Image 1 (tube, helix red, strand yellow):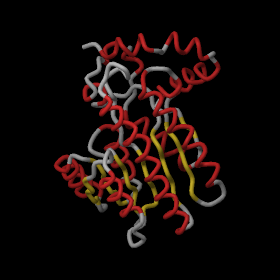
Image 2 (cartoon, rainbow, N blue to C red; image 1 turned 90 degrees about the vertical axis):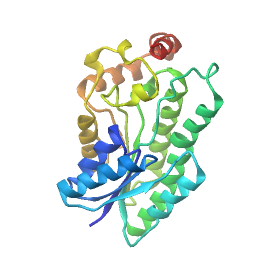
Image 3 (cartoon, rainbow, N blue to C red; image 1 turned 60 degrees about the horizontal axis):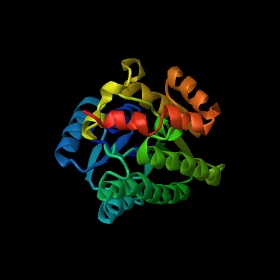
Image 4 (cartoon, one colour; image 1 turned 90 degrees about the horizontal axis):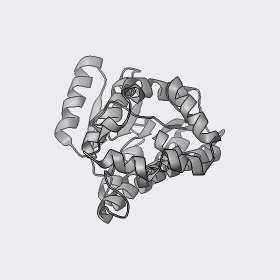
Length: 258
């Protein structure tokens, strides 16, 4: 049986991807920094769904962590058919007022690491004739709320470009742009989720199921749920000056306050 490799699999959206791909069924490789948490999830998946669940502890902010995942992607004896680049985090700071170290880690994990794993994964999949790369962007990619939004905008455009290069090869790229979700994201980033209306929050299971269905259809861009499809359609049609006014630094600063 083939494998799905999921980064950022120790919680939230990544954990949900692991469970849903294991239910396909696919064997899963769980990648994150928290080894104990990964082992717990892997044990539950093995017991509940009867598939193999491999733990790969790696910090994608480091070259060593990235190369560890790349080596697994290149292993033809246990072929990875699906790569989910989900690892990421909220910065919880303004760009100018915050620490550069955290900005640098964000660029490394959500930018360079995603690109490096996509490069290695795509080459390995091309050798095998087929595969899926699923990159996690964000609805914030259509806003001006901090450098996190900027990085996720890059993820979206990078994924679109990669999908055109791979068109017709048997390897597809899908990019999911979820909105607010009920995960540890805001708490981990020390952000106040209370500034957002509760109706805006979506269950991770819904986001993942729609992302997987889109990947099956080889759809390049997917925005889960009708409410966010409508919101993002409005964002795409709105002038950028209006988006900066509505979803810019002032709203982002409010979210940083506890």
